[in-house]
Length: 321
Image (tube, rainbow, N blue to C red; front, side):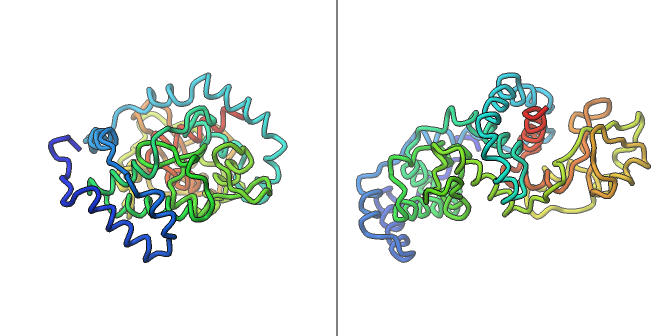
């Protein structure tokens, strides 16, 4: 949204925090936490600038190849393989418990924070209060601010509550509401520590994917060969997705892998003939193509972007290659 279109708050920041405090009380947050977090809080102009600088929807998406080159690069692959070796002893139990492959857990961790090398240093309460007060997405950010207060009531030290300008934090960059719902204790110490515990980080990512509907034993997708002259528009999807419509509109109809093979689309890695998949050729004819399964849609629930989801899947494959 251009800065000229930024929403002007209708009330003062202290006045808005009084409304937040009232809501928090109504939702059972303790007075001690409300006072500790909201007293003296000030808006962060930098957060508003960053929010207003977010790009709007583009008529034609840019090529995906440059994005993949930056996010599935040699350093990130090497970092993933190193981390994979470090946590190899944890993965079998987590895979059995959640049904999510270890390589997917590692790829999310690598994509979000480069395996924990940078998790953000913005004060979460200040950032979320600023974004909610600004008003453009008040419902979202006010709910996340209340979730931060509930995290503190649950015993999370305020010193941990640093993250991105938009409120995501920890190794997997969870929002506060996601932490409350899905953060998991992977090492059995009673603390879902997604900041410094690899076991808790991986368990939490896996729990997110299981909750989102990950299908055990099914790949996210595979590279595919599409024959020259293949009539892509003939297989355009006629389904209207309720969310992320422009992302899903770029995918074809659903058919089984066997049906696609009969049409000349050949998978270039093992995948069951009965698995339902869509064809995705993001950069057009003659460029890399993919058969994407329902598990790709699960990755999209983490971040609804074909750029993101495809890079996660490809990074996961490279980590274990």
